[in-house]
Length: 256
Ligand code: PGA
Image (cartoon, rainbow, N blue to C red):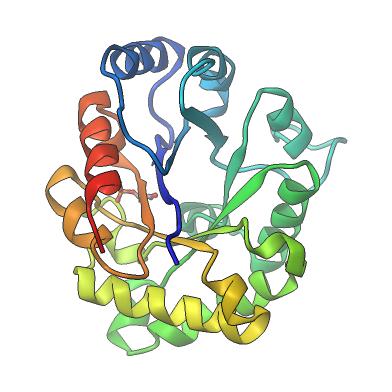
């Protein structure tokens, strides 16, 4: 089974409108010449509108980094799924570890957000992953399965195949320490098997499972060469348009 590759840029709280326009101008100058890959850029909310205009007539899609679990209402400072849909977002990152750990997001909230993203015709990029303490105590697979149980197990069977799962070990995010391809593959395989038990092997084989945590041009090829790693969620290294392009091309060209 060949799953379409998936590479997403998570700019976090970086790159406003001006930097976003510069980024897409560089991307557009260099033809991508790659097929069978989804390329998604997730800027901060304030740059989504201009990013949406910049990617019109290109292969690039835009996504958001978070959303609220309600459609509208008295939620000062929040952004809902329909507001993102109106801006042209096709994906929303949900449950990123920075949201779980710095903003206290619970699995219950994450599950409600996943529902909203699907309800409004977008695709969630659901993040799971263990902390350093979790890994050192040998609990990686227990932690990941608990996160999946509380969120992914509640997804409708007809929606699950479009879900993107991002395995992001917390100790590898923004630290320069990436999981080795073998360490990442072990967890990706486990996630696919978990999905297989819940939803059947056919569906599990359709779900894209991407890796995130210090992905750079020099480690991308090794990571996406693994059989269950379908792409990457890239933070820091995605801020540079040329580097991001290089990683997209690497991901599209590596055989597995
Ligand atoms: P990083 O971030 O590539 O800077 O480690 C990845 C992420 O948090 O999605």
